[in-house]
View 1 (cartoon, rainbow, N blue to C red):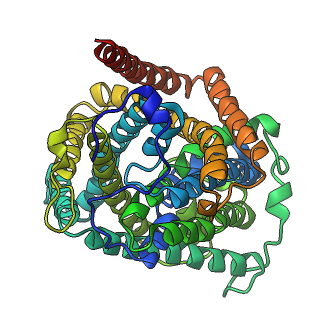
View 2 (view 1 turned 60 degrees about the horizontal axis):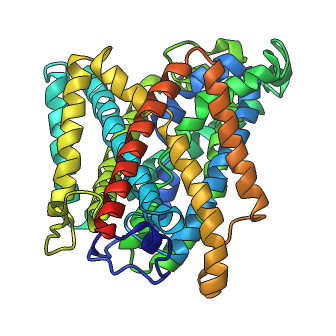
Length: 470
């Protein structure tokens, strides 16, 4: 914990390790599975259908592009977190690289993003559970989920790790099983199936039925599904060996995530014509139904249900650690710094879940008005966060090489060229959102929210300078 610093002090912060008061209960297996499972959510299992509709088989290329960008961000984060593990992760890195305004802005934006998305996940899981048990109202399911995961996060951090480990394991096993069944169907090995081959990749309008514009639209539809990878670097600060743990988790996650995403899409558009996908139905269900897997819809409902609860759990954890880190640096109320005997920031957890409850109520009562505005306000925030991560890495890499090169146990590929390329790709996605009628409202609302946070950060800097002069 430390008092607020001036801008000059923040940018000159030593590269020493943080003295974290949090516990170190996360094991290597927890971080590895968190890295894998953090981005495997409902966006892949359900939302990928929207990408297929606009890109056709070219969705494979869309996922390659979006996945490559996400891998670059993951690698940048891994480099900084292995060198300087901290519970605030990229918020701390941004403060060290650019000043307090950057750490404040990216930290609060990310916290707001997590607690709003948390409401979507809780509501989505409640809708599925309500379908299984209609006698229990949807709001009651939301309450149950929120209480269960609040309890898990208020207990020792290893409870969060265990929840996420088994959730992620189930999701990974589901994707592996899907890939195996899909490949068997392609080659006609399954009973009562003929070899499909690769005809669906080139038929029905060709591999790019909507041209490269369809691929680009597909990138817009799927890039945000990769959000969530950041939590593993936040969690690294509470592992037994932060430096080695985050390095191993990032190395193992980046390739496997890309394999799971791109592999799944390749199977989907190979087994069936892309035109066979139906709106509102998971592409995974459509494929499993076509190859004769009994109760495919129920199976995928269970997987999506677990994915939503996993994301809820991870977001509650990530948001509590982020606001704790902000409080630790004087950027949030210092009352949130209370740490329980087991090293858990309970007030930070309760503050995050309290806002999460507010978001859920807004989602249940006004899904098409108040909550929609909130959701739009965080729609493109992830790209703003990623951009600050990239800029921070550009600044800090040089400092680490100069002051503590031995800490670069994990390095960004082709530095600095690939970092600049990733920044250019983010700018291109934001530019495309301006021209897309569906994405434009999200960009404008998110830009407004970002501008507001930046204005508050600027005002705080101005006041601090006046205090220092006095």
